[in-house]
Image 1: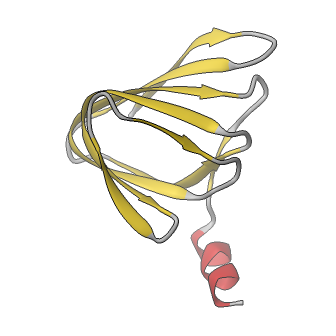
Image 2: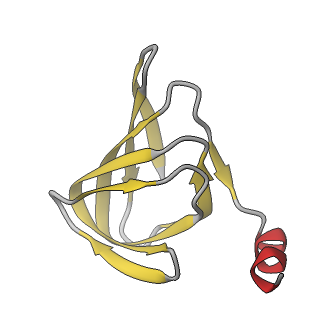
Length: 102
């Protein structure tokens, strides 16, 4: 997976993400809302207990701190717009399962 920051301003930043076919992005979340625009390829997004097939031209908003994961089915490229100080955090699988049970 390759993630490059293309722009950083006072109001937002833009990341470009490239992931090869067969790649995965484990459960993670952003510390701000994340607007995603798919440019190339396909991926399966696991989000809110459902799965969505992402394709070129699709756009969607992932709310702040909502865990999600990606499984790449063909070489994938997307732009992500985040808050200026936002970080992408990996979800601790054990803590995530504990919260789901509670």
